[in-house]
Image (cartoon, rainbow, N blue to C red; front, side, top):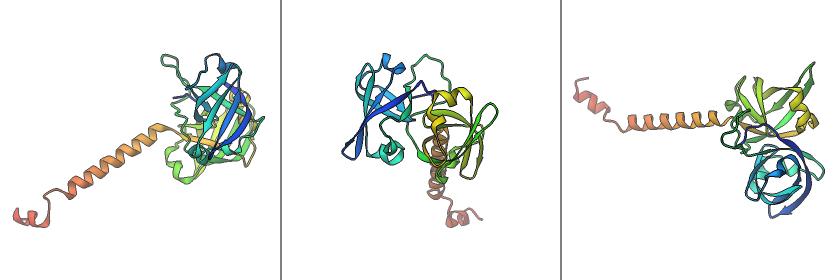
Length: 219
């Protein structure tokens, strides 16, 4: 589990085809002081498992499912990416609960520079907009952000100068694609409500309340 608070920007050092996916080498410094094989690291919001590492870089293996749902197919050598290690129990939790399980890709529609911040608007696939609410949380390329506005499929977030400077958000351009993870809480609530409604319908259909039963009671 992650928080969406990026620790540093790493650099892609190698992208090698491997089956239907890729083996990716990422150079880093800040996070490497305790990274080991089998650790989880968020790369642009995508949870990946470290399969090899040295003091200055680590390797991950992105499989077919990851390539299908994320922007990893667009990674190139020399490109910077947002990095975050898994959250430690007992530490303060800023941001919000982020799993690193990307829901979809979104297209950057506008980038507006204001006096002290930037407004970033992305177009999210319609299916996922039901999990996004104003002033709720959303993870874009691994960055925990607050939804400032949502109009149909257009989602706008405000980015403070520090976040803009220390993440890859500042390198985005209109038309680029980003990884989106919606708030997990909304998904659980939807699932629970759907299960409850299904159970209620099943109980009603299997009950004794039939036309014959009502007639027998004098109705």
